[in-house]
Length: 468
Image 1: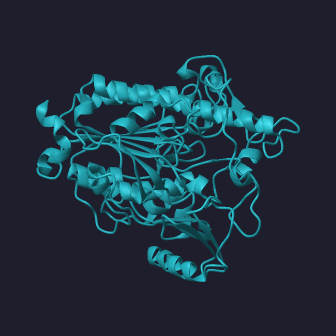
Image 2 (image 1 turned 45 degrees about the vertical axis):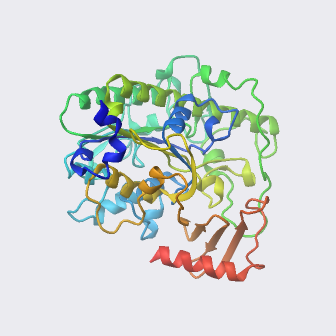
């Protein structure tokens, strides 16, 4: 017990001991960086708040891409996209076509170095990691050779595609015909994440009996659309005062703004219901999103509780990661898929047993690609060549350590985020730019590119260095 309480300091002294350290990696889909412990007072998130208080929250963690597949590509390969296919949801399938025999994914690297690797839920883009019509074709593997076990509970939805966008009673989404919101009476098994969590706990019990260290990844669906969860979580927000939506107007001029096609195209809204025009409906959507955050939080609570009950917490690194943000009306967008702050800023919390400065948050700018080398250094697993990111161990030891500019991309546009600025470059040759000053109060509403050409040139050079 005493040895394990000193685990964090031993990472840097005894690699052989560190190699026996487990990893619990929790992925949460479409989670904004808004928890009560991170300043969103109206959000009920006690489990994730407990991680913030016992670990290190990175309050300026930026994903590489504002879409699930490309963001998870960056997480699981530790690399920026090198072609257009890797900027989209099929990114990992594309990577698998060209991967050589050397490990290319984070779980494969751990598996090749003595870890038992288990995936439950949505870790890569496809829940369960398979392709095909219903995402259940064993001949089409998203990340070959990565997982010893890869599972996606589908009851009562019958297949992963149905479960991904599932409603109560096993009802799947029917694009354009089913609603974006649903809250039925029932327990956590009324919706998908209850089943994912139960399976993850069963896998945790099995892993606890093994002498092998494990890398257990658990991918929760909510708060991804549809905003569907048990009514008890929606009831939490009945009388909660919501903060105003910041900068709610559609941007003027060129930007990555879009018409919220996922939200409006894939779901049926009652006639006249448009949150861009109807503030009451906007609040209804926001409360339902918050309810789904609380539903996901309840699943995190079960995972963390079971980790404690099995005694595994003393020797397990816990990472909680959001794959990207989600606009709730900012810039008149209801969705992701922009290069604005709301799409690219996402939660990242890392807890290491025995860590110093537990509970202190860091505002250093970090990226999703930094997670792969961080976990390698923490566990003593060899770090492969060619990773795009930098280990965050120094930030885990010292919350005041400085970060580095964060790079992102969407389609033919790229962005760089520094403490002072965000530059967005449109087109491979820099056909147009957006420059936003984050030292003021305007957020990303006033394009200063024409007024500050020297800053544009400097940040453009940083993008060029990342793109190489």
